[in-house]
Image (cartoon, rainbow, N blue to C red; front, side, top):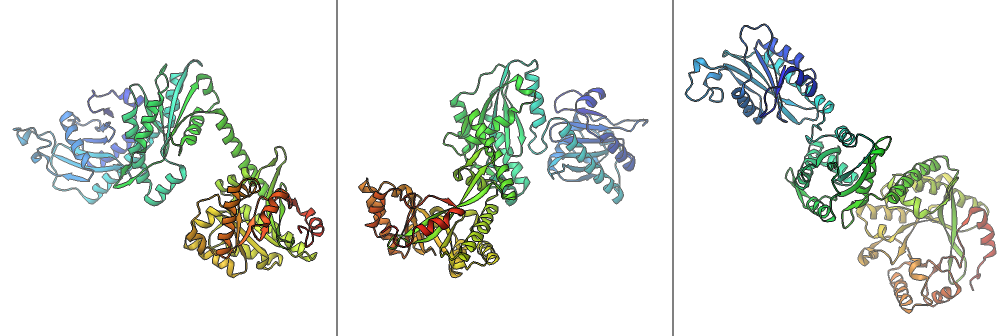
Length: 589
Protein backbone atom coordinates (compact mmCIF):
# COMPACT_ATOMS: atom_id res chain seq x y z
CA UNK A 1 0.00 0.00 0.00
CA UNK A 2 1.17 3.55 -0.70
CA UNK A 3 -0.28 7.02 -0.87
CA UNK A 4 0.33 10.11 -2.94
CA UNK A 5 -0.86 13.72 -2.68
CA UNK A 6 -1.75 15.78 -5.74
CA UNK A 7 1.63 17.32 -6.38
CA UNK A 8 3.91 15.56 -3.92
CA UNK A 9 6.18 12.54 -4.31
CA UNK A 10 4.99 9.08 -3.44
CA UNK A 11 5.25 8.42 0.28
CA UNK A 12 6.93 5.37 1.74
CA UNK A 13 4.85 2.62 3.30
CA UNK A 14 6.07 3.67 6.74
CA UNK A 15 5.08 7.30 6.23
CA UNK A 16 1.65 6.33 4.99
CA UNK A 17 0.99 3.95 7.85
CA UNK A 18 2.02 6.45 10.50
CA UNK A 19 0.53 9.63 9.08
CA UNK A 20 -2.38 8.94 6.76
CA UNK A 21 -3.23 5.24 6.94
CA UNK A 22 -6.68 4.32 5.67
CA UNK A 23 -8.15 1.74 8.06
CA UNK A 24 -8.94 -1.54 6.33
CA UNK A 25 -7.97 -0.43 2.82
CA UNK A 26 -5.37 -3.15 2.23
CA UNK A 27 -7.81 -5.91 3.17
CA UNK A 28 -10.56 -4.41 0.99
CA UNK A 29 -8.20 -3.92 -1.96
CA UNK A 30 -6.78 -7.44 -1.62
CA UNK A 31 -10.28 -8.95 -1.79
CA UNK A 32 -11.21 -6.76 -4.80
CA UNK A 33 -7.99 -7.60 -6.64
CA UNK A 34 -8.45 -11.32 -6.03
CA UNK A 35 -12.16 -11.36 -7.00
CA UNK A 36 -11.70 -9.30 -10.17
CA UNK A 37 -8.30 -10.71 -11.01
CA UNK A 38 -6.61 -7.32 -11.53
CA UNK A 39 -3.02 -6.26 -10.76
CA UNK A 40 -3.95 -2.82 -9.38
CA UNK A 41 -6.69 -1.46 -7.11
CA UNK A 42 -6.63 2.28 -6.39
CA UNK A 43 -8.68 4.62 -4.19
CA UNK A 44 -8.75 8.37 -4.89
CA UNK A 45 -10.32 10.71 -2.32
CA UNK A 46 -11.63 14.22 -2.79
CA UNK A 47 -9.09 15.66 -0.31
CA UNK A 48 -6.28 14.85 -2.79
CA UNK A 49 -5.00 11.61 -1.26
CA UNK A 50 -4.57 8.40 -3.26
CA UNK A 51 -4.11 4.80 -2.09
CA UNK A 52 -3.20 1.81 -4.21
CA UNK A 53 -2.61 -1.89 -3.84
CA UNK A 54 -0.76 -4.35 -6.10
CA UNK A 55 -1.00 -8.07 -5.22
CA UNK A 56 2.45 -9.42 -4.37
CA UNK A 57 4.11 -12.10 -6.50
CA UNK A 58 2.83 -10.91 -9.86
CA UNK A 59 5.41 -11.16 -12.67
CA UNK A 60 4.48 -7.71 -13.93
CA UNK A 61 3.16 -4.83 -11.86
CA UNK A 62 1.07 -1.87 -12.96
CA UNK A 63 2.19 1.35 -11.21
CA UNK A 64 -0.13 4.26 -10.54
CA UNK A 65 2.08 6.80 -12.32
CA UNK A 66 1.30 10.48 -12.86
CA UNK A 67 -0.46 9.92 -16.21
CA UNK A 68 -2.71 7.17 -14.86
CA UNK A 69 -3.34 9.13 -11.66
CA UNK A 70 -4.44 12.18 -13.67
CA UNK A 71 -6.79 10.10 -15.82
CA UNK A 72 -8.34 8.45 -12.76
CA UNK A 73 -8.88 11.82 -11.08
CA UNK A 74 -10.68 13.04 -14.18
CA UNK A 75 -13.01 10.03 -14.02
CA UNK A 76 -13.53 10.37 -10.26
CA UNK A 77 -14.64 13.98 -10.62
CA UNK A 78 -17.67 12.86 -12.64
CA UNK A 79 -18.86 10.83 -9.66
CA UNK A 80 -20.52 8.02 -11.66
CA UNK A 81 -19.71 4.32 -11.95
CA UNK A 82 -17.88 3.51 -15.18
CA UNK A 83 -16.54 0.38 -16.89
CA UNK A 84 -14.00 0.81 -19.71
CA UNK A 85 -13.62 -2.60 -21.32
CA UNK A 86 -10.91 -1.47 -23.75
CA UNK A 87 -8.94 1.50 -22.47
CA UNK A 88 -6.50 1.32 -25.40
CA UNK A 89 -8.94 3.36 -27.48
CA UNK A 90 -9.49 5.96 -24.72
CA UNK A 91 -7.44 9.13 -25.15
CA UNK A 92 -7.35 9.65 -21.37
CA UNK A 93 -5.05 6.60 -21.03
CA UNK A 94 -3.06 6.85 -24.26
CA UNK A 95 -0.62 9.68 -24.90
CA UNK A 96 -1.15 11.51 -28.19
CA UNK A 97 0.46 9.63 -31.09
CA UNK A 98 1.17 6.51 -29.03
CA UNK A 99 0.59 3.02 -30.41
CA UNK A 100 -2.48 1.41 -28.72
CA UNK A 101 -0.63 -1.91 -28.79
CA UNK A 102 1.80 -0.50 -26.23
CA UNK A 103 -0.82 1.06 -23.92
CA UNK A 104 -0.16 0.44 -20.23
CA UNK A 105 -3.86 0.21 -19.34
CA UNK A 106 -6.29 -2.07 -21.12
CA UNK A 107 -9.24 -2.26 -18.70
CA UNK A 108 -10.64 -0.03 -15.93
CA UNK A 109 -13.72 -0.25 -13.71
CA UNK A 110 -14.68 2.61 -11.36
CA UNK A 111 -17.21 2.80 -8.51
CA UNK A 112 -18.03 5.96 -6.50
CA UNK A 113 -17.17 5.94 -2.79
CA UNK A 114 -19.55 7.58 -0.32
CA UNK A 115 -19.22 8.46 3.34
CA UNK A 116 -21.64 7.44 6.09
CA UNK A 117 -23.60 10.68 5.56
CA UNK A 118 -24.09 10.04 1.83
CA UNK A 119 -21.51 12.61 0.75
CA UNK A 120 -19.30 11.55 -2.17
CA UNK A 121 -15.73 11.03 -0.94
CA UNK A 122 -13.99 9.76 -4.08
CA UNK A 123 -13.80 6.65 -6.26
CA UNK A 124 -12.40 3.09 -6.21
CA UNK A 125 -10.68 1.71 -9.35
CA UNK A 126 -9.90 -1.81 -10.52
CA UNK A 127 -7.28 -1.65 -13.31
CA UNK A 128 -5.80 -4.30 -15.63
CA UNK A 129 -3.23 -4.30 -18.42
CA UNK A 130 -5.44 -6.29 -20.80
CA UNK A 131 -8.88 -5.37 -22.17
CA UNK A 132 -11.89 -7.46 -21.12
CA UNK A 133 -14.91 -8.51 -23.09
CA UNK A 134 -17.25 -8.20 -20.11
CA UNK A 135 -17.52 -7.87 -16.33
CA UNK A 136 -19.90 -10.27 -14.64
CA UNK A 137 -22.66 -9.30 -12.23
CA UNK A 138 -20.80 -10.93 -9.37
CA UNK A 139 -17.67 -8.95 -10.18
CA UNK A 140 -19.64 -5.68 -10.37
CA UNK A 141 -21.26 -6.46 -7.02
CA UNK A 142 -17.83 -7.21 -5.51
CA UNK A 143 -16.54 -3.83 -6.74
CA UNK A 144 -19.54 -2.04 -5.25
CA UNK A 145 -19.08 -3.82 -1.92
CA UNK A 146 -15.40 -2.92 -1.89
CA UNK A 147 -16.26 0.73 -2.58
CA UNK A 148 -18.75 0.74 0.32
CA UNK A 149 -16.14 -0.71 2.68
CA UNK A 150 -13.57 1.80 1.45
CA UNK A 151 -16.03 4.61 2.25
CA UNK A 152 -16.35 3.36 5.82
CA UNK A 153 -12.58 3.30 6.12
CA UNK A 154 -12.30 6.82 4.70
CA UNK A 155 -14.84 8.11 7.24
CA UNK A 156 -12.94 6.41 10.06
CA UNK A 157 -9.68 7.90 8.77
CA UNK A 158 -11.23 11.37 8.91
CA UNK A 159 -12.25 10.82 12.50
CA UNK A 160 -8.94 9.31 13.59
CA UNK A 161 -6.99 11.90 11.68
CA UNK A 162 -8.22 15.51 11.83
CA UNK A 163 -10.85 16.20 9.23
CA UNK A 164 -14.63 16.58 9.54
CA UNK A 165 -16.06 14.57 6.62
CA UNK A 166 -18.86 17.05 5.84
CA UNK A 167 -16.90 20.33 5.73
CA UNK A 168 -13.38 18.94 5.20
CA UNK A 169 -12.21 21.18 8.05
CA UNK A 170 -10.15 20.11 11.07
CA UNK A 171 -12.54 19.05 13.81
CA UNK A 172 -12.75 19.70 17.55
CA UNK A 173 -10.14 17.10 18.52
CA UNK A 174 -7.71 18.73 16.08
CA UNK A 175 -8.55 22.14 17.56
CA UNK A 176 -7.61 21.11 21.08
CA UNK A 177 -4.54 19.25 19.85
CA UNK A 178 -3.28 22.35 18.04
CA UNK A 179 -4.13 24.62 20.98
CA UNK A 180 -2.15 22.44 23.37
CA UNK A 181 0.74 22.28 20.91
CA UNK A 182 0.77 26.08 20.75
CA UNK A 183 0.90 26.39 24.57
CA UNK A 184 3.10 23.43 25.56
CA UNK A 185 4.84 24.68 28.69
CA UNK A 186 1.99 26.05 30.81
CA UNK A 187 2.93 29.57 29.78
CA UNK A 188 1.75 32.11 27.26
CA UNK A 189 -1.68 32.90 25.86
CA UNK A 190 -3.58 32.38 22.64
CA UNK A 191 -6.56 34.18 21.12
CA UNK A 192 -9.63 32.21 20.04
CA UNK A 193 -12.50 33.33 17.83
CA UNK A 194 -15.73 31.28 17.65
CA UNK A 195 -18.50 31.82 15.11
CA UNK A 196 -22.04 30.64 15.91
CA UNK A 197 -23.59 30.25 12.47
CA UNK A 198 -27.17 30.50 13.71
CA UNK A 199 -29.17 29.95 16.90
CA UNK A 200 -29.39 26.24 17.69
CA UNK A 201 -33.18 26.17 17.34
CA UNK A 202 -32.96 27.79 13.91
CA UNK A 203 -30.17 25.45 12.77
CA UNK A 204 -32.27 22.48 13.91
CA UNK A 205 -35.14 23.91 11.87
CA UNK A 206 -32.86 23.88 8.79
CA UNK A 207 -32.17 20.20 9.41
CA UNK A 208 -35.86 19.33 9.91
CA UNK A 209 -36.95 21.21 6.80
CA UNK A 210 -34.07 20.51 4.40
CA UNK A 211 -32.02 17.65 5.85
CA UNK A 212 -28.42 17.34 6.95
CA UNK A 213 -27.16 17.76 3.39
CA UNK A 214 -28.49 21.32 3.38
CA UNK A 215 -27.20 22.04 6.89
CA UNK A 216 -23.72 20.77 5.97
CA UNK A 217 -23.75 22.85 2.78
CA UNK A 218 -24.73 25.91 4.81
CA UNK A 219 -21.86 25.35 7.23
CA UNK A 220 -19.45 24.93 4.30
CA UNK A 221 -20.70 28.17 2.75
CA UNK A 222 -20.18 29.97 6.06
CA UNK A 223 -16.71 28.45 6.39
CA UNK A 224 -15.78 29.75 2.94
CA UNK A 225 -16.65 33.28 4.07
CA UNK A 226 -14.57 32.92 7.21
CA UNK A 227 -11.68 31.54 5.12
CA UNK A 228 -11.72 34.75 3.08
CA UNK A 229 -11.54 36.76 6.31
CA UNK A 230 -8.79 34.93 8.19
CA UNK A 231 -5.26 36.28 7.99
CA UNK A 232 -1.98 34.39 7.44
CA UNK A 233 -1.19 31.92 10.19
CA UNK A 234 -4.77 31.58 11.44
CA UNK A 235 -6.40 28.14 11.31
CA UNK A 236 -10.12 27.44 10.88
CA UNK A 237 -11.87 24.47 12.56
CA UNK A 238 -15.38 23.06 12.73
CA UNK A 239 -16.00 22.38 16.41
CA UNK A 240 -19.76 21.65 16.27
CA UNK A 241 -22.43 21.24 13.54
CA UNK A 242 -23.20 24.98 13.44
CA UNK A 243 -20.03 26.33 15.07
CA UNK A 244 -16.62 27.32 13.68
CA UNK A 245 -13.47 28.31 15.55
CA UNK A 246 -10.36 30.24 14.54
CA UNK A 247 -7.07 29.80 16.38
CA UNK A 248 -4.67 32.72 16.04
CA UNK A 249 -0.95 31.96 15.78
CA UNK A 250 1.26 32.23 18.85
CA UNK A 251 2.08 35.75 20.03
CA UNK A 252 -0.54 37.20 17.69
CA UNK A 253 -2.58 40.09 19.03
CA UNK A 254 -6.35 39.93 19.12
CA UNK A 255 -8.31 40.93 16.01
CA UNK A 256 -9.14 44.62 16.05
CA UNK A 257 -12.74 45.82 16.45
CA UNK A 258 -12.67 46.84 12.80
CA UNK A 259 -11.62 43.33 11.76
CA UNK A 260 -14.37 41.74 13.85
CA UNK A 261 -16.91 44.19 12.43
CA UNK A 262 -15.81 43.13 8.95
CA UNK A 263 -16.27 39.45 9.83
CA UNK A 264 -19.78 40.03 11.15
CA UNK A 265 -20.66 42.08 8.08
CA UNK A 266 -19.63 39.34 5.66
CA UNK A 267 -21.43 36.68 7.72
CA UNK A 268 -24.66 38.69 7.72
CA UNK A 269 -24.77 38.95 3.93
CA UNK A 270 -27.52 36.71 2.46
CA UNK A 271 -26.13 33.30 1.51
CA UNK A 272 -27.39 31.23 -1.40
CA UNK A 273 -27.31 27.61 -0.27
CA UNK A 274 -28.50 24.93 -2.72
CA UNK A 275 -30.65 27.53 -4.47
CA UNK A 276 -32.26 28.87 -1.28
CA UNK A 277 -31.26 32.36 -0.14
CA UNK A 278 -31.37 33.20 3.55
CA UNK A 279 -29.80 35.53 6.10
CA UNK A 280 -28.11 34.14 9.18
CA UNK A 281 -28.01 35.48 12.72
CA UNK A 282 -24.35 34.86 13.54
CA UNK A 283 -22.59 35.55 16.80
CA UNK A 284 -18.83 35.97 17.11
CA UNK A 285 -17.03 35.42 20.42
CA UNK A 286 -13.46 36.40 21.33
CA UNK A 287 -11.37 34.96 24.17
CA UNK A 288 -7.76 35.12 25.31
CA UNK A 289 -6.94 31.73 26.84
CA UNK A 290 -4.02 31.13 29.19
CA UNK A 291 -1.97 27.93 28.98
CA UNK A 292 -2.83 27.01 32.57
CA UNK A 293 -6.52 26.83 31.62
CA UNK A 294 -5.87 23.78 29.44
CA UNK A 295 -5.52 21.65 32.56
CA UNK A 296 -9.14 20.88 33.44
CA UNK A 297 -10.54 24.07 31.91
CA UNK A 298 -12.75 24.44 28.88
CA UNK A 299 -11.82 27.55 26.90
CA UNK A 300 -14.05 26.52 24.00
CA UNK A 301 -17.12 26.59 26.26
CA UNK A 302 -16.25 30.07 27.48
CA UNK A 303 -15.71 31.58 24.04
CA UNK A 304 -18.93 29.88 22.88
CA UNK A 305 -20.70 31.75 25.68
CA UNK A 306 -19.36 35.04 24.31
CA UNK A 307 -20.55 34.14 20.80
CA UNK A 308 -23.99 33.24 22.13
CA UNK A 309 -24.24 36.55 24.00
CA UNK A 310 -23.29 38.40 20.79
CA UNK A 311 -25.89 36.64 18.67
CA UNK A 312 -28.72 38.96 17.76
CA UNK A 313 -27.00 42.09 19.07
CA UNK A 314 -26.45 45.06 16.80
CA UNK A 315 -22.68 44.61 16.79
CA UNK A 316 -22.70 40.84 16.46
CA UNK A 317 -19.46 40.12 18.34
CA UNK A 318 -18.40 40.19 21.97
CA UNK A 319 -15.34 39.70 24.14
CA UNK A 320 -15.78 37.01 26.79
CA UNK A 321 -17.18 38.47 30.01
CA UNK A 322 -16.91 36.39 33.16
CA UNK A 323 -20.02 38.03 34.65
CA UNK A 324 -22.17 37.05 31.68
CA UNK A 325 -20.77 33.54 31.88
CA UNK A 326 -21.57 33.21 35.57
CA UNK A 327 -25.11 34.46 34.95
CA UNK A 328 -25.61 31.83 32.24
CA UNK A 329 -24.29 29.08 34.50
CA UNK A 330 -26.54 30.27 37.32
CA UNK A 331 -29.53 30.20 34.98
CA UNK A 332 -28.69 26.63 33.98
CA UNK A 333 -28.46 25.70 37.65
CA UNK A 334 -31.85 27.30 38.28
CA UNK A 335 -33.45 25.44 35.37
CA UNK A 336 -32.38 22.08 36.76
CA UNK A 337 -33.54 23.11 40.23
CA UNK A 338 -36.88 24.33 38.84
CA UNK A 339 -37.47 21.01 37.10
CA UNK A 340 -36.89 19.24 40.42
CA UNK A 341 -39.18 21.70 42.23
CA UNK A 342 -41.99 21.05 39.74
CA UNK A 343 -41.52 17.31 40.14
CA UNK A 344 -41.45 17.32 43.92
CA UNK A 345 -43.95 20.17 44.46
CA UNK A 346 -42.44 21.22 47.80
CA UNK A 347 -40.72 24.53 47.01
CA UNK A 348 -43.37 26.12 44.80
CA UNK A 349 -46.58 27.67 46.06
CA UNK A 350 -49.31 29.97 44.83
CA UNK A 351 -50.06 33.40 46.25
CA UNK A 352 -53.32 35.16 45.44
CA UNK A 353 -53.95 38.85 44.76
CA UNK A 354 -57.51 40.18 44.91
CA UNK A 355 -59.24 42.13 42.16
CA UNK A 356 -61.95 44.37 43.55
CA UNK A 357 -65.02 45.69 41.77
CA UNK A 358 -64.78 49.48 42.01
CA UNK A 359 -68.43 50.45 42.43
CA UNK A 360 -69.17 47.85 45.16
CA UNK A 361 -65.80 47.22 46.77
CA UNK A 362 -66.47 43.47 46.52
CA UNK A 363 -63.62 41.09 45.64
CA UNK A 364 -64.74 39.35 42.47
CA UNK A 365 -61.53 37.62 41.37
CA UNK A 366 -58.31 36.25 42.84
CA UNK A 367 -55.26 36.13 40.57
CA UNK A 368 -53.00 33.10 41.20
CA UNK A 369 -49.29 33.96 41.14
CA UNK A 370 -46.54 31.33 41.30
CA UNK A 371 -43.85 31.78 43.97
CA UNK A 372 -40.61 29.80 44.39
CA UNK A 373 -38.65 29.63 47.61
CA UNK A 374 -35.37 27.85 46.92
CA UNK A 375 -33.85 26.08 49.96
CA UNK A 376 -30.47 27.85 49.59
CA UNK A 377 -31.15 30.86 47.35
CA UNK A 378 -34.32 31.93 49.11
CA UNK A 379 -37.10 33.63 47.16
CA UNK A 380 -36.52 33.50 43.39
CA UNK A 381 -38.38 36.20 41.48
CA UNK A 382 -41.01 35.12 38.92
CA UNK A 383 -39.31 37.58 36.55
CA UNK A 384 -36.35 35.17 36.70
CA UNK A 385 -37.84 31.71 36.80
CA UNK A 386 -40.82 32.11 34.45
CA UNK A 387 -38.68 33.09 31.40
CA UNK A 388 -36.30 30.24 32.29
CA UNK A 389 -39.22 27.82 32.32
CA UNK A 390 -40.22 29.03 28.86
CA UNK A 391 -36.70 28.67 27.47
CA UNK A 392 -36.16 25.23 29.02
CA UNK A 393 -39.43 23.68 27.85
CA UNK A 394 -40.89 23.56 31.37
CA UNK A 395 -43.70 26.06 30.82
CA UNK A 396 -46.46 23.58 30.07
CA UNK A 397 -45.49 21.57 33.15
CA UNK A 398 -45.58 24.73 35.26
CA UNK A 399 -48.94 25.79 33.83
CA UNK A 400 -50.44 22.37 34.56
CA UNK A 401 -49.09 22.62 38.13
CA UNK A 402 -50.70 26.07 38.52
CA UNK A 403 -53.99 24.78 37.07
CA UNK A 404 -54.12 21.83 39.45
CA UNK A 405 -52.97 23.66 42.58
CA UNK A 406 -55.03 26.81 41.97
CA UNK A 407 -58.28 25.05 41.03
CA UNK A 408 -57.94 22.66 43.97
CA UNK A 409 -57.68 25.69 46.27
CA UNK A 410 -60.67 27.36 44.61
CA UNK A 411 -62.69 24.19 45.21
CA UNK A 412 -61.75 24.32 48.90
CA UNK A 413 -62.84 27.96 49.16
CA UNK A 414 -66.13 27.19 47.45
CA UNK A 415 -66.79 24.48 50.03
CA UNK A 416 -66.25 27.17 52.68
CA UNK A 417 -68.87 29.36 51.01
CA UNK A 418 -66.47 31.87 49.41
CA UNK A 419 -67.80 33.01 46.04
CA UNK A 420 -64.89 34.27 43.90
CA UNK A 421 -63.47 33.62 40.46
CA UNK A 422 -59.89 32.44 39.91
CA UNK A 423 -57.62 34.06 37.31
CA UNK A 424 -54.68 32.00 35.98
CA UNK A 425 -51.76 33.33 33.94
CA UNK A 426 -50.97 31.45 30.73
CA UNK A 427 -47.89 31.63 28.46
CA UNK A 428 -47.88 31.84 24.67
CA UNK A 429 -46.40 28.32 24.73
CA UNK A 430 -49.69 27.04 26.19
CA UNK A 431 -51.84 28.66 23.55
CA UNK A 432 -52.68 25.66 21.35
CA UNK A 433 -55.61 23.31 20.78
CA UNK A 434 -54.74 21.33 23.93
CA UNK A 435 -55.22 24.26 26.30
CA UNK A 436 -59.01 23.94 26.64
CA UNK A 437 -58.88 20.16 27.32
CA UNK A 438 -56.06 20.63 29.86
CA UNK A 439 -58.00 23.28 31.77
CA UNK A 440 -61.26 21.34 31.55
CA UNK A 441 -59.58 18.20 32.93
CA UNK A 442 -58.23 20.09 35.94
CA UNK A 443 -61.60 21.74 36.57
CA UNK A 444 -63.46 18.43 36.34
CA UNK A 445 -60.93 16.76 38.62
CA UNK A 446 -61.72 19.24 41.40
CA UNK A 447 -65.39 19.82 40.66
CA UNK A 448 -65.14 23.50 39.69
CA UNK A 449 -67.33 24.98 36.91
CA UNK A 450 -65.36 26.50 34.04
CA UNK A 451 -67.33 29.75 34.37
CA UNK A 452 -65.53 30.38 37.68
CA UNK A 453 -62.16 30.49 35.90
CA UNK A 454 -60.36 33.16 33.89
CA UNK A 455 -57.16 32.91 31.85
CA UNK A 456 -54.80 35.89 31.49
CA UNK A 457 -52.60 36.40 28.43
CA UNK A 458 -50.15 39.23 27.92
CA UNK A 459 -51.05 41.76 25.27
CA UNK A 460 -48.30 40.59 22.90
CA UNK A 461 -49.45 36.97 23.21
CA UNK A 462 -53.08 37.83 22.66
CA UNK A 463 -52.58 40.24 19.78
CA UNK A 464 -50.10 38.20 17.72
CA UNK A 465 -52.42 35.25 17.27
CA UNK A 466 -53.27 33.04 14.33
CA UNK A 467 -56.45 31.19 13.43
CA UNK A 468 -55.54 28.25 15.66
CA UNK A 469 -55.05 30.62 18.59
CA UNK A 470 -58.35 32.34 17.89
CA UNK A 471 -60.18 29.01 17.68
CA UNK A 472 -58.67 28.00 21.03
CA UNK A 473 -59.80 31.23 22.69
CA UNK A 474 -63.26 30.96 21.16
CA UNK A 475 -63.57 27.41 22.50
CA UNK A 476 -62.59 28.61 25.98
CA UNK A 477 -65.09 31.48 25.91
CA UNK A 478 -67.88 29.19 24.70
CA UNK A 479 -67.10 26.87 27.63
CA UNK A 480 -67.60 29.81 30.00
CA UNK A 481 -63.94 30.61 30.75
CA UNK A 482 -63.12 34.30 31.04
CA UNK A 483 -60.29 35.71 28.89
CA UNK A 484 -58.30 38.72 30.11
CA UNK A 485 -55.69 40.65 28.12
CA UNK A 486 -52.93 41.43 30.63
CA UNK A 487 -50.33 44.25 30.66
CA UNK A 488 -52.28 46.25 28.09
CA UNK A 489 -50.66 49.45 26.87
CA UNK A 490 -46.98 48.45 26.90
CA UNK A 491 -46.94 46.12 23.90
CA UNK A 492 -47.46 46.68 20.19
CA UNK A 493 -51.20 47.02 20.06
CA UNK A 494 -53.06 46.15 16.91
CA UNK A 495 -56.46 47.72 17.41
CA UNK A 496 -58.12 45.68 14.69
CA UNK A 497 -56.81 42.45 16.24
CA UNK A 498 -57.86 43.72 19.67
CA UNK A 499 -61.38 44.40 18.39
CA UNK A 500 -61.68 40.81 17.12
CA UNK A 501 -60.13 39.20 20.19
CA UNK A 502 -62.55 36.82 21.97
CA UNK A 503 -61.74 38.34 25.38
CA UNK A 504 -63.96 39.94 27.99
CA UNK A 505 -61.47 41.81 30.23
CA UNK A 506 -58.70 44.32 29.57
CA UNK A 507 -56.05 44.87 32.26
CA UNK A 508 -54.17 48.17 31.91
CA UNK A 509 -50.51 47.73 32.82
CA UNK A 510 -49.43 48.96 36.24
CA UNK A 511 -46.51 50.99 34.83
CA UNK A 512 -49.06 53.32 33.22
CA UNK A 513 -51.34 53.53 36.26
CA UNK A 514 -48.89 54.27 39.09
CA UNK A 515 -48.32 57.90 38.07
CA UNK A 516 -51.79 58.98 36.96
CA UNK A 517 -52.32 61.03 40.12
CA UNK A 518 -49.21 63.13 39.45
CA UNK A 519 -48.77 63.23 35.65
CA UNK A 520 -51.60 64.58 33.57
CA UNK A 521 -50.37 62.89 30.38
CA UNK A 522 -50.40 59.46 32.06
CA UNK A 523 -53.93 60.15 33.30
CA UNK A 524 -55.01 61.24 29.81
CA UNK A 525 -53.52 58.13 28.22
CA UNK A 526 -55.08 55.74 30.73
CA UNK A 527 -58.45 57.50 30.50
CA UNK A 528 -58.39 57.04 26.72
CA UNK A 529 -57.58 53.33 27.18
CA UNK A 530 -60.52 52.90 29.55
CA UNK A 531 -62.86 54.50 27.03
CA UNK A 532 -61.43 52.35 24.21
CA UNK A 533 -61.82 49.19 26.26
CA UNK A 534 -65.44 49.99 27.06
CA UNK A 535 -66.17 50.85 23.44
CA UNK A 536 -64.84 47.40 22.46
CA UNK A 537 -67.05 45.77 25.09
CA UNK A 538 -64.29 44.84 27.58
CA UNK A 539 -64.47 44.96 31.34
CA UNK A 540 -61.51 47.24 32.26
CA UNK A 541 -59.19 46.40 35.17
CA UNK A 542 -56.62 48.87 36.55
CA UNK A 543 -53.41 47.25 37.80
CA UNK A 544 -50.86 49.07 39.95
CA UNK A 545 -53.29 50.88 42.29
CA UNK A 546 -50.81 51.41 45.12
CA UNK A 547 -51.95 54.62 46.85
CA UNK A 548 -55.18 56.25 47.95
CA UNK A 549 -54.43 59.14 45.58
CA UNK A 550 -54.20 56.80 42.57
CA UNK A 551 -57.41 55.07 43.66
CA UNK A 552 -59.19 58.44 43.83
CA UNK A 553 -58.04 59.29 40.31
CA UNK A 554 -59.12 55.89 39.04
CA UNK A 555 -62.65 56.41 40.39
CA UNK A 556 -63.11 59.36 38.05
CA UNK A 557 -62.28 57.16 35.04
CA UNK A 558 -65.19 54.77 35.53
CA UNK A 559 -63.13 51.60 35.22
CA UNK A 560 -64.64 48.33 36.43
CA UNK A 561 -62.07 46.70 38.70
CA UNK A 562 -58.86 47.66 40.51
CA UNK A 563 -55.86 45.66 41.64
CA UNK A 564 -52.67 46.65 43.43
CA UNK A 565 -50.82 46.94 46.73
CA UNK A 566 -53.26 49.57 48.06
CA UNK A 567 -56.03 46.98 47.69
CA UNK A 568 -54.01 43.96 48.80
CA UNK A 569 -50.62 42.40 48.22
CA UNK A 570 -50.38 38.82 46.93
CA UNK A 571 -50.91 36.51 49.90
CA UNK A 572 -50.66 32.78 50.64
CA UNK A 573 -53.86 30.77 50.50
CA UNK A 574 -54.07 30.56 54.29
CA UNK A 575 -54.61 34.34 54.53
CA UNK A 576 -57.20 34.74 51.77
CA UNK A 577 -60.33 33.80 53.74
CA UNK A 578 -59.50 36.22 56.55
CA UNK A 579 -58.85 39.02 54.07
CA UNK A 580 -62.13 38.36 52.23
CA UNK A 581 -64.15 38.41 55.46
CA UNK A 582 -62.49 41.68 56.48
CA UNK A 583 -63.27 43.36 53.17
CA UNK A 584 -66.98 42.86 52.63
CA UNK A 585 -69.01 44.87 50.16
CA UNK A 586 -68.38 48.59 50.43
CA UNK A 587 -64.86 48.25 51.84
CA UNK A 588 -63.62 50.77 49.26
CA UNK A 589 -66.59 53.06 49.67
